[in-house]
Amino acid sequence: MNGRVLMAASLAVLAVFGIALWWFQTRAFYEEFAVDAIRVGDVEVPVTDFQGIDAKTSPIKLRACMKVAPEDFDNAEPAPNATPLVAQSWFNCFNAKALSRALEAADAKAYLAAADEFDGTLRIIAVYPDGRAYMWRQLTEEFANQ
Image (cartoon, rainbow, N blue to C red; front, side, top):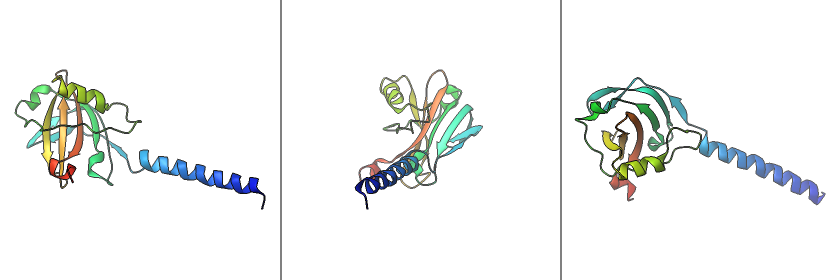
């Protein structure tokens, strides 16, 4: 067998494998969804301009962007150690770095929407004074430290 043919076949298999691996890591399993309201504790909060992604393969793949009335969160429980997780690059509305900076500078406030929605997770919503809001799930400290 000619070495060039073997090398070309190996490179073709490698390219197909690389593309499949990239697709499964960044695109597969994610589903876009939309809602008109979100539950924050025991309260239904209406939302507009909602964009969300989630996957059944992991409880911490949830990311969402929306608009809310900030006063709907007046009685919501603050979220301890809110740490936005990075979204897939194709989900443009969610910028975890900018959101982290806003939370640190107190330009946005984080609220606990649900605890143990899935075992060991917290659903967090960060709200800006202008009504922009972002939602994600993160692991509880107990699970994050394992």
